[in-house]
Image 1: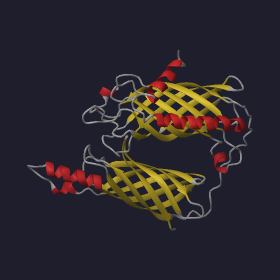
Image 2: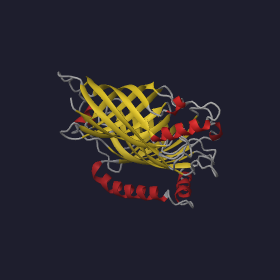
Image 3: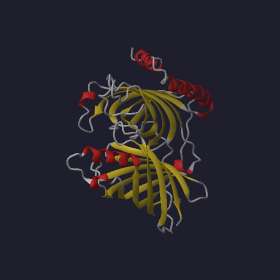
Image 4: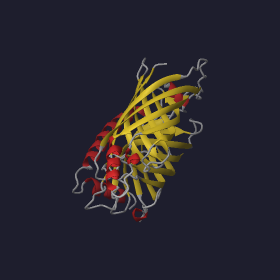
Length: 387
């Protein structure tokens, strides 16, 4: 019965009258066929997990959505690490893979989400041990079957767009039981947000208890050499650069999606072999905020306040950037030195992922601006470092 129910849920979700989720099923099938062939020669493995969880009410006004315990179903194809990549050796030889996830909120307002996720499993202890404690970090996209609608689904105040960003974080313990099989258990955190591309965008968070199993068609025992910490370079002169960012978001339901652009000069200093400390300024100009500011000014019939009509923002941030081969991840904490619109908090956070072009000072990346648990917008970033 436990196995039949998830299969029925997949069938109900993928082949309902709304045909859009079929796209995810087709992609999953293509990945499955390719992976099944490729796994025969690489020692890759399959993993299936089920989760039972609870919605996190991270702000007021979400209690009407927290009416039942959500369930999670996830099918993963994972490739083990090799022993030749230097960046993998530095991080204890992590595994990498793709997942197809279905999350059912058991709530008529929220519906379900169907997503594809790329994730990395970091081994927290000796890589050669059979029993493993792992940290699973993933990022992908999901399709939400029920979104906000003024007429038919006005109670959904968390997701305004059917396409959402879907990061996930898991802590797993793996126990091998036979040469081909292992049992997995642990905890997972999931988040769905459209990054304010459409409002409302309060986002929905959930935490799960997970239980599953992994199957390896061709078991291979790889002896991983001890990981080595790279030395800190002698020349650690601070670097200077500038970042241009472009994104789109909506500030208030019904006002429309508009462009936002930023210019961010910064200074970077290497403090660890693979880590940099960054200090910079964000100059923010959002056309969606401009439209919202004009809307607020017009609504102030009795006592209009022209100072609230300024939509521009100026922020100071400090961040840490960690390097993984040609890719780096950065987390920033910022404070607004100037803002007149009070619907933003005084502090903000930014998550970035960058790709460093070979033999060039140019980087391209993606950024996500956050105010606590609420995403403000996502951006495409172009970074140039001249010193």
